[in-house]
Length: 303
Image (cartoon, rainbow, N blue to C red; front, side):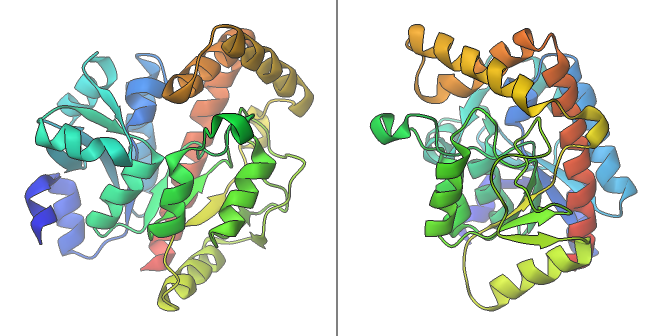
């Protein structure tokens, strides 16, 4: 396969593939663009450790020197977390970054693509992208949704980021036949909060049930991903009314400053962190770790 010349596996992932061990993919945008230093590096290492403790092998994915790295070293992690040369890589950016031997941190969409190339079926992240508020005029819809429509990777997340239009995001996923499973919940979590005004399609209460549903979907030849919406742990969740007010205020400021496109999410998340006095960062770290744990348990049951 032509794709193999672009893939580079870490020793740990290579070993896991040989031994047919469960593997969980992790994205790298959260390291380079999603969290400040040094919390980004610390969280990435802790998340990998949580996956190992739950019986799976972590594979953090990134684009470095024109290679798709499936699993990275500590040095590479440090570089991703501190360098200013790391571009945000989604589906459209992969050919450019690889052809020009540049560095890229993979978004949800790009991580799904690379995970599928590497034969990895489960991916744990923070929250998925979706339909932005006002998308009926801006057409600002995350590439993550289109990827979920066509790429066979299950994405364990804390729902959709609460800065999005969650109702329209669910409509889009429904149109493309992407099931949204609530892990021990009937309500779709909204990243920082355990609930939202929206329900999930189906509730699953165990990793075994989630794995059975995912496997059945693909055995039926129904291509595309599955969203496993796993709420943030109760102790770390923020109040729905509080976070709604904070987001409204951040959105207003983004509009006033004409911030658009791929700059919107980092701006809004930065603003939310500022307005919540850092509580959002603590919540973000907690939910990513929780998703890693559930992701590992699902991967173990998919084998």
